[in-house]
Image (cartoon, rainbow, N blue to C red; front, side, top):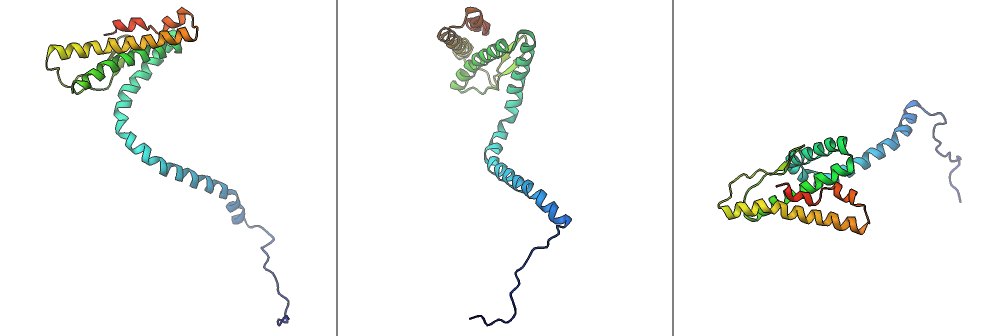
Length: 175
């Protein structure tokens, strides 16, 4: 039984749209996208902030490496440039690993186009044996890198001219 005597009117939205309602409708999807991006970067800060302490190393080592790759790309193509600089990086990593094994403080590799690369020893080796081991670490790991290049070339049946582009075995002479 209905005790109300007046008919119930349902609420109706205004039939005419105002300028503000049109602006809200247009900007709502952008707001959602902004919130999603903000949430993504909020979670990403836990990854990015710890990586910022490695920024000077990346700028020094990575920056000079990219410069060297760019210069060699202009002269001999990107395949040679990338292969050569990566083998040079493997070679320098050999020196770095042996120096770290002996407890020496070393800097990141710095690449110099047409000269090679170097790692700066921040403290001198304590004896000739240690210095010799640090010196031979680069050619040892460089030769291993050249062997990997050769095996990959054999596996993929790359012509010898492409395999020698990486200057694999000649990395022994990059002391």
